[in-house]
Length: 365
Ligand code: MSS
Image (tube, rainbow, N blue to C red):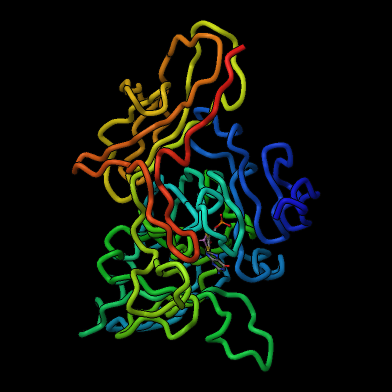
């Protein structure tokens, strides 16, 4: 991954802010750790990109309201245009969009896949129609269907079995209570790179479940038969193959990280900034340590609380003497989950939230 860093932005994301991003590949761009600062909402220009398949052509956003979604597994299944979806209902939700592999670079074993540090995550404001409203408008979920399945609109090349590459994810049906079909991101029509014209957003769930270019929303009896559901995005022991019996990357865990200062600071008082998230639960507090976890100080949240699925910027003012300091942050949720010191390795390097690995080595001059 290192050799590719510093590359120019790929064409389809040429509008992004190159100074704030690390280009890992055409399909994977990461937000620089320092770029977030105490940002409440991640500007679209800075938001990370992760595509499993190349994005479809710009044509699909030329006439957004004409985009068609097929809704299945409801009493009255039908195809509906984005224009018509907009007449059913509308809601805005702020939530963290975070790749399952965010933090992969912190695992000690060899992990294949993008070596994300902290920047495969952002806090995004989505506007769209609640899935439950769409379901109500179509007569409710049909009997015995336990999964909510979203299918991405990428074209699958002829001769390639769709199960092997198509982005199709199933989540437990209950997630529909907070899921939305989004057309706006941060107050603008969703850019193609982030899944416009229509994206399934499941607040509190890992990025992979937030299917872009959504062309089908189906209540199904079983999880999608596709590889991305069956064997990929599973927490599996190091050295083992993926299997449907292993935990899937659904609910995110409690996590925080410092966004500055990251390398050097002057002696005296310094503001230590970062962001914290509760996953699917609201945060209770964040603590910061400047002595490698020996003592902790409660941080102050900055800005408004945007709800349980959003992240919260935090700050602590510390007095630091000359020399090196290990800065760490540790978040806890209202239901008592605490960011752990270490995180057990898993083969693909998913879900790392250990505070020690996310610590910063600061030199005070
Ligand atoms: N969707 C689709 N359609 N395709 C693809 O590829 N990817 C995933 C999600 N969705 C995809 C989709 C992932 S995997 C992620 S993270 C996300 O998305 C990202 O987002 P953005 O907007 O940031 O790029 Mo991992 O867990």
